[in-house]
Length: 117
Length: 112
Picture 1 (cartoon, rainbow over the protein chains, first blue to last red):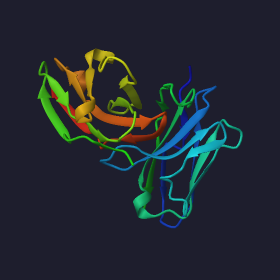
Picture 2 (cartoon, each protein chain N blue to C red; picture 1 turned 90 degrees about the vertical axis):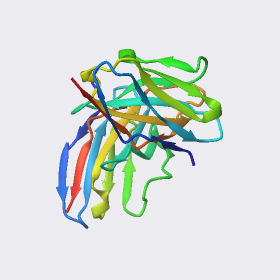
Picture 3 (cartoon, chains in turn brown, orange; picture 1 turned 180 degrees about the vertical axis):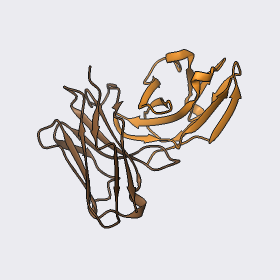
């Protein structure tokens, strides 16, 4: 079974520029997550999709971050404009479900390391 | 909002030593608890989980964790560590598959 794919693996941009990350979840997985992991910290959930609908985006800085999952498969996360504090690894994860009362394991991708200079 | 605390930032052990990594969470409702591991250069992967039932859960590679509800804790243990256990360990909690929160992580270094 192919894992969660992310691209690019590394990205260096200047502050105020825009950047986009792409994630392809495991085939058939309904739920997709984007996390931000700043150096020395644990992953922080930015947004959770169930199919193409947003379940939770309470920690997404909506003034500069946006994400979409138009067909319920691939997803893109965009930052516009980037700030120095956005330097982090952006992780995508997917799971086969998301219904309350059941457990679905999250599978993580390799991440995209973003450096903002 | 729920939060997760991992008190040990970096732990250094010799091979065959016993390991216990602390994890405390704050949340008033029913939670699911997890330990994830990230080996050098690899993806985050699930080590073990607690969903319900027996509070002592066993995971891969000889790891186990005990859920103590009264202490809001979910400590990770291994009786005898190996050099290959060198990794970063993250405790996490969610509620009904939503709102996943991770701790800051504990870096474990096992000296051969």
